[in-house]
Image 1 (cartoon, rainbow, N blue to C red):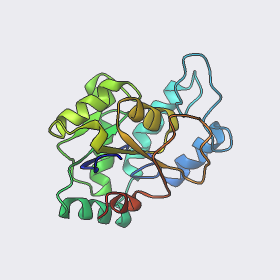
Image 2 (image 1 turned 60 degrees about the vertical axis):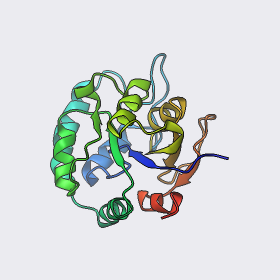
Image 3 (image 1 turned 90 degrees about the horizontal axis):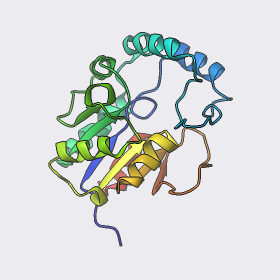
Image 4 (image 1 turned 30 degrees about the vertical axis):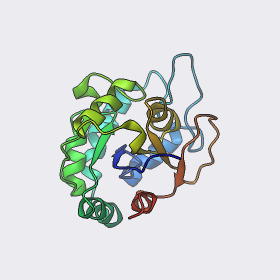
Length: 196
């Protein structure tokens, strides 16, 4: 039997917030019908094909102002805060993640690990270890990681010893083990996983 969950970590993009609609459309054109791009040696599940780094950089700068408050996300954080459940965010990105959170109406948590600022990115174990440290040294087996990317989020967190909840976004799990401990449609389901 697993120990009770005491803390939650979230991915940001496409977990806590959708891309603005016009960027979703561009992303779907570049991706394989909404699935991750085909694997290449050394790839770990990024959204954009190799050679389009300049375009990804433009999108990250452009998408930040398009983020806005989402009541279901804000309500979910209210529930966690009301129950005094520590939570944080682990995101692969740049300084623009700060702008996204501000535009979403989410106060930056004490536990905010942004890959370009920290020097490691998901699925590397260092980012998860840093987040657990910022949460006060909580046990990974008592921490839930919530994310949408099978490799970066679910496999990365599971390999670091965390329990996982996959935001499926209309998809079915195809990657194989380690499989997510929970499969959800929206982060508003997280409090129920914790029994809140």
